[in-house]
Image (cartoon, rainbow, N blue to C red):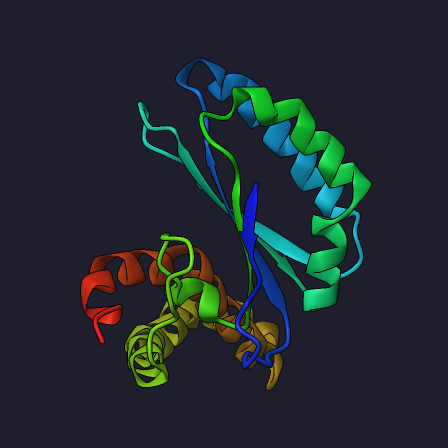
Length: 192
């Protein structure tokens, strides 16, 4: 198994374990069962903040899993745990190649190309992509919530309204929009 620690100059709250598994075609069903087990196990560890799975298409083999923790120490604790080591040993024969794993801090996990050892894009490109994703959402998401605010005025309470809108925007950015946008602009993003 290979792993890469994040660059020393990254000092952000939170950390993401970015994991790549290439699963043998005949083992997909077993892998999916195992994946539920290991996600549940990770969820019991301190600092666990959620998981995002990018599954392969019907005939594909490549799974991308991002497991989010509150700190690099929490991520490291799970990564080096006996529980994770034992679960990984169970699925190892079903993998077509060794696991690739990196610990990324802050939002850098969106911008790190899949090739091991690749550098994170320059900050101004990260800023530009992030702004171009969040800006239209800050306009559209409040409009989508507006009918519900009209029907249930309690939801329009100052602070609650902002929390609902912010949570919706963050969920869309993290789970839906950003992974797709970054994949699409990747050649430009990683060109120096």
